[in-house]
Length: 379
Image 1 (cartoon, rainbow, N blue to C red):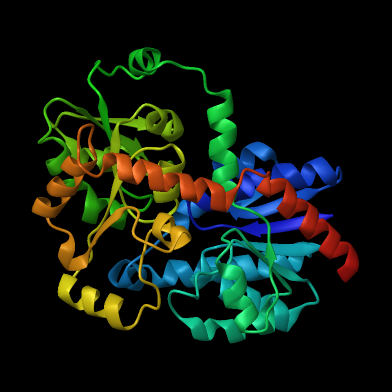
Image 2: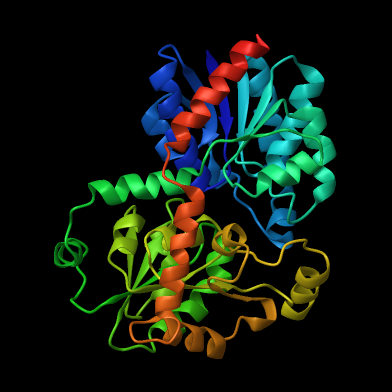
């Protein structure tokens, strides 16, 4: 069968690449075409556009790149119709992907499947109407999403969490000692504070300066930044030039496996950090923080922004967002989770609940099996 996939960021590239690999394990004749990234290309198929050409966030960056965004949408729609796959698989990235789903539903008989469902339980719940109309099947990776969609009388498939599967697989194979990791990455012997500052330029610009300033205050630690795959090293030099911060690429899991604590922006990285058993502070700076804080309290329908807290349904990790994102607060919370800190052991203990909730099944294989079975029934 022919599969057309669309992702919009690094985490989507990772999850989609594993899904593609699992599909190939079942469907030996699988053909792939995609808007994606380097990891998907390694699995095979034809890349139409790299996700770095799609990843704009924030009102101003989106406004400045509207022409490019609309051009990419038009290209994607026409390319799907021309190639005529057996299925279109959307991966997260709802602003772009729901627009594609609407077009494909209205202009073809190609079924649209959604893997890693849009987070409408947090924001824009009205999008459920579009999903019901345009998406044939939805595959969820978060257990708490099932009752939300059932409430709206839209049944979904819970296939397990790919991040958990990916981390557990890495941990089971990873044998490198910290000394060897530091030697390979040209680090010194001090314990490590990891910085995971996001995968988009706007996130990095907003969060990294404060994260670095706080982490460098702790002189007994070395500060190591996980470079995002789609961000050129020159961009990071705008922030870290002449500062004692090391940037490493394509090795985030090894970094987390050898870190004592981390400062992390919201997103998949918060869950990855927890699964590696690394205490963390979630840092997310926003423009006009008081307004953003008001929006968060009164318009967003969930208490938390980090996947760790959402899955646990309680505050396991501290979230410093909008008006609570200050140097003083970041420093205070980081101190509490470093070795000897008053909150470190409690956070590590509560991580165990996350492990139990997510389990350790091969979610990519479960998703691939469910997708192929559903396509057979659809045919």
